[in-house]
Length: 437
Ligand code: XUL
Ligand code: CO
Image 1 (cartoon, rainbow, N blue to C red):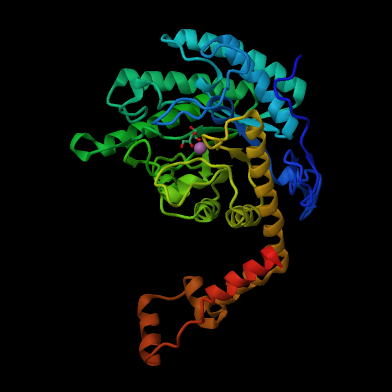
Image 2: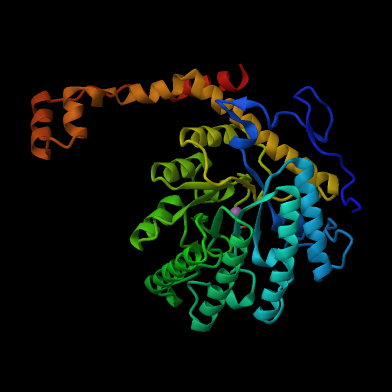
């Protein structure tokens, strides 16, 4: 078959290389903390951005050409995207992809026709997966673009629209199982509201949970053994989104008894939109046993929306990989839910974007392993709480005391000694020495 991209397979050449089409830090076979880089970093291509997004924004149309030699909106184009996607992933050594139902085929007016198209394209994708060894990280249903979802999917006010949400989830789960996907994502893009004047929040949350419960029951019945994920995001497109952040989503899952089947898919740019750091969202997920997968991108602190940039901030990838390593790795992977900037509009730019993202995470992994090997930060945190190793501290942590006894102790002391310093500036210096020393 004639190649679509005039680019050779991307190789690791090291940091000294000036070749724009080579990895400088991502060396898949290099062993870090006993595991190969490619095993630490199961990267995935997001079908929607990489094969779909062509630079359109609110003020202007496409700047890039993603027709891949076929007419857009046709099944020939859907097939050309498969060819392009698998060639692209093979050339980069990206071993996974993620998809929405309607990324794969043009959506028809009648859902029966869309489903028939999905059957056809998924056979073709499966043949490519078998040929190349590329795997599916996760699937999802797009329940936010079609106008019928204007008031939400699980949270809609229309019982009929709720059925369409169910139908799309059922089909997307069928496809995920067909591809052997590791996960299934719920990103609640329209699950939220603009004003309480027209919204019954309790009713909407109950219905979202009902839909998720049905998805779990159906998924398990067809042999899906992977994780369901919630991908938290506080806003955009809605003003208030129910899955605001990891803590909110985890509380919701526990409230409705869904916590055994679900984990978090944490997206860096969603974390910052929620007023958190990426690593905060990872830590909250990890301490709740719910760190599942990552949408690897970054936002822009000067802009208030989801810019979905390829990760470039190595402090952020380092602190992310520190969380991932300490959590013992991910059951999911690192999906580049990211797009080229609008003026980066050539096919070569698509490769530069992935090289940047993969190199940034490789650097993050190398530096995070150094933080762990160095040990000063872990040691500091442990020491910070040393007072709880004392007899008094142990009384508190083992639950063998009560408010009255502790109050007596305080009153006997009269005044407390100051706690030990947090030493933030010292620790930031340690981080810099580890990163650049
Ligand atoms: C939107 C977003 C989605 C989800 C999947 O902000 O991140 O692409 O990852 O629906
Ligand atoms: Co995402």
